[in-house]
Image 1 (spheres, rainbow, N blue to C red):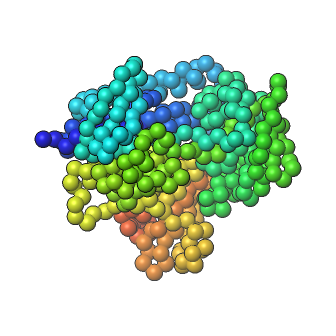
Image 2: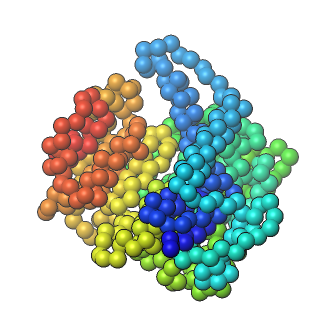
Length: 453
């Protein structure tokens, strides 16, 4: 008899677990309450990147004179942008649905909760309910934007991230609260669309978890583009008027604008799942998992944002695959676990930012000896051809062995270029392996080989 696996949540973690388990012979059911493909993925990640791409196209055309062309003045078509985002979402959701159905996965539209160690009660969107029995249960319910008590979100002037893809109207002056990855991407995209933008930064640098040199490069770009930075200011209240908003900060400063967007993190969708009733341990709403993503109940797994690990779609997908393989008995012997410290990540600002592995600042704070080499894109022929020489490539390596430990890239196509360093970090390659690889010329990737010298 095939192993029965019930997956709650059809986002990157859930659908990857489903397709992998189905290929391995499991009888798989996926329950999704919102949209197949994942609400966080299709309502947050994809729309934001689509808007950033549009903003990037506007910026590229604005730099036409640097490419030997006459200047052009493109205008944003908000209706066309909204239609473009919806089209991308529909195609991706349909693609996920089609793939799951082609592999024999049963899809149910509804909400689910655990009513026993091996029982899942499903309430269908159209009414009615079912009781599913499972040998393995995978929890992949994702997260939602965090809204503090002092924020009167109305979807009009005070927005969560999900209200802003795109917002009801183009903000004349947008105040962004939160200077993490999501916050700085919002600053970039709306400044590209012509809005005046003020960013409230609770720490002394944007991107507080990133390399200070990387953060400084982004801050310099923001200031050059006229972005207002309230550094060392924590938002405490929002006043909403007929024609604008006022954000009061802990240091007495007040930011005045037309709209405000909250980008201050997310909270896990663990409420209503019945976790405590079946003995699944939870910490601040996140399911406590081991290196195999198993909860305190061995046959119940958790992945994606719910697991409390890196909140990245790429990480969620890998967790889903690893869960399916473990549940189907492929990892009974010692094996390579998912190493969250070696996961590559990117920030789609302009210029783009990407990193992987050990950061220079973290190495120094730990007292660890490392070799750090850096090459600016201003020395790259391809960057000059592109008329965009902003940024640099930085590689962190072990001075004794030459093993690549990490790297950061600031510049055009950083999210793509970081893949080379990510492969080196995960495979334990040496800087000489990068240095001696013959790359395409001219290409931005040459800066990676040069930084490895």
